[in-house]
Image (cartoon, rainbow, N blue to C red; front, side, top):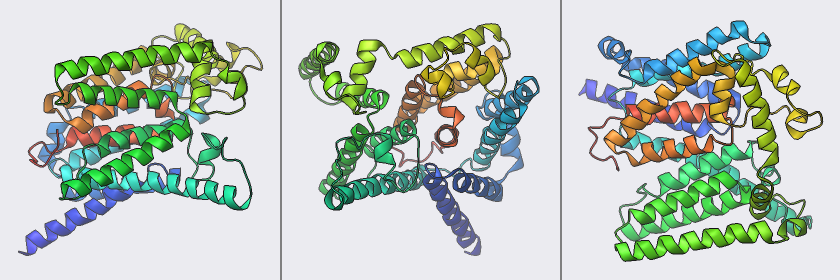
Length: 412
């Protein structure tokens, strides 16, 4: 009886730490780093030598996270700016400590812990969104401030913590997908009501952030859900046809209307989408061009963890946006190639392939959609270069990979 009580206490503490770790992801670097460190040290309560040794092999994904980190450490020595490289590698140490953490937690993670982690991240995101809406409404009511332009950075500036817009959009789209499968209450009608309200609120907030890529992923998600629904093939064909026609007409309208001129100065979704369709996202294209030029001269090992900003700036036009704002690659795949060359990119892709194989092998809904969201989002942002994106990827990918598949409560 005493052993059972002790084990329950251990799991209760673990639940709390996992909740805090997930809750801290959108917050400050210090809060998140401390939470991850506590999780790392507490995981040794469950350490088992035989499990740890058997997990460090090429058949498991853990070793590839560690090798990818070792590659980053090595790259410090040939980086142009070693101080920047050391800071980058220090931040990326979670590629080393989180695999150890989740090896220690093998057979301790089940769907109940997934729900606890989901609630932690959901609470963190909702607290920021609700506070932003509250402050905007207050300003509109008492300070007579227009709310039409309260989108993207101006919207986030009203929240309780500062976060780069694409990263918050990434978290929101992931939460929408998770919310679609989470059970909140044993009563079906109440459960559907809670789910509907949460998804509706998160979708409205996603449009408020005006993230084109996140809206694209949201559309993809709804299309896939529709195709795999219980509706007849005839209804599916009609539905997909209507969606296709709507999409084509929307592209045509955005390309040919003068809406962009009428709303210029606003960063709303329609303005951003029209800008991309009309001008093919010239800022990113110019930025990617400079990145590819540097990569072509440093193919095998890359420019190092420092990011090679000095080399990138030489390939950019002076006074261009990438030059003025000192942009990184704004693409996870190009960023890894730039920093670590074919060697680092190969390690990263091996890691991704193992994760994809595991996700589809166990048919885990959350795992599959997590990878879809992150890998597609990575086409337009370098998410692994900031703490939020870095922890989000490493934490959740290892969480789903390590999840105890014998748990019968798991939702597929």
